[in-house]
Image (cartoon, rainbow, N blue to C red):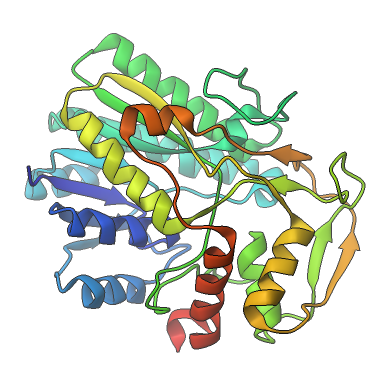
Length: 339
């Protein structure tokens, strides 16, 4: 059934790839984004790839009045909520900005949804809600704790959404705990395009490879991991996007409240990622070891079995594909969407 889905943060890295998958699955899409960490040109690329014109509103989700107007105008049946600040390190320096954007922004969105009787939401949560897990791989019922303000906003929002569902069972809520999305669209024309110095590993590595940055900073080599560097579960952004389409099918059946890990179930260290990118690029990538970054943990990777069992979803693209696609995007567009 074709439904109209409002995507907040739909001009961002995960948002744009999800918009493509939604359109290809037959849904209508409306995008709301304040373009603080994204670019309007990314949606123009999505329109070229899909051949569909996408209604776009440049708006901040903290602006409840504008959101109400958008909901009245568009009448979406569901929301996929990506909008928010997302850098662990930055959140330790400017926590108030994270609480304002992520918490206040989502509360504003939920008010607008409730007033317009739109009670279906897929929330972009994060593996950071597990804090520093005692064991890996991580299951959905592991204890939740956080080590940084970014993770705290995600955990608080999960709790807010749970409270809303408990108060009104007409709501359908899916909490998707992402691990580490990387890669890019196979066209090479859509990928991660951070404003300023990248906070995430892969775009930093690709910008070093393309000559925009001098060398990769590896934050700590004294973790309790095989090579001493942090281990993460990297998932191709296209696989992650398809996970949202699968979650939407779940919501359409009136699913209540559900939570899923979206990851591959495999962990790769920072040095292994650099090595895999070197293969994709065809030359060495310079790096140096620096001090640990506040809020970082040793190892974090998922057990995605629940998503496979209940959503019929699993990641299909491997680390080689992730690195090749990321490099195709960066080498074709050294300056991102400005090229």
